[in-house]
Image 1 (cartoon, each protein chain N blue to C red):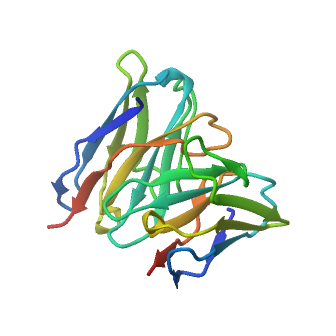
Image 2: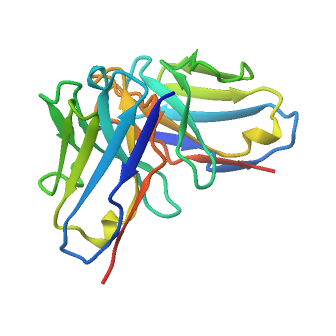
Image 3: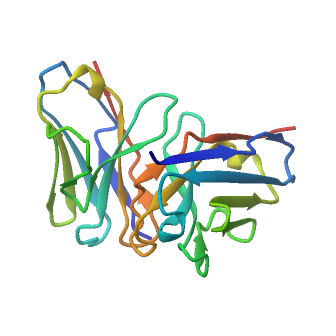
Length: 120
Length: 105
C-alpha cells in the first residue's frame, strides 16, 4: 500500500523558516517524481515545487522561488521542503505527492498533509 | 503560464443526477489534463488522467472528455459519496489547477 506521511508542520513567525518532510513507502520511491502542493484555508490547490526521481532536476512556482528548496534522499525514501522567509501568504496545508513522470506531472498519490501557519 | 478556468464554482444536485463540470485551458495542452476529487479535511484523489483515462479503482460513472481546449468531467448517476469538490489540473507545463467545483446537495 502506498503511503506518504508528512511531518514538520508548525506555527512559525513571519520571516521564519521551517522544514517539512515526507516519508514514503509502498512504491519504488526513486522511480517517481515528487512534489509539494499546498492549499490555503478555504482555498484551492496550488503547486509549489517538484523534483525528479533521481533528484537531479527540480523546479519551483514563482510564488516561492528563491525562498523554498525541495530535496530528496532516495536511500531513506524521504522528501523535504525547506521554507525560508515565510509570510502569512504561505499559511496552508502542504501535501506531498508522487508522479510517474517529472515532465508531465499528474499527482498519482498524495499524503494527508501538514499544516503550516505563519503568524505572530 | 497555462491558466485553467473551471466552471461552475459550485452546483447543487441530487442522488441519481448526471453532473458535468468544465475546465478550459488558456492554450493548447493536448491531453495533459487530470481531474481530482477532494472531500473536506482529506487529500485530493486522482480520478482521471490524460483527459479521459480512469484511474484504477475509480468507479466507471466518472468519465472525462476533451474538445479543443475544453475538458469535461461527467459523473453519471451521482452517488452520495460523490458530494465533494473537484479540481482539474494541467500537466502540459508547470502544473496549475482550476479553481474547483463544489458539488453539494
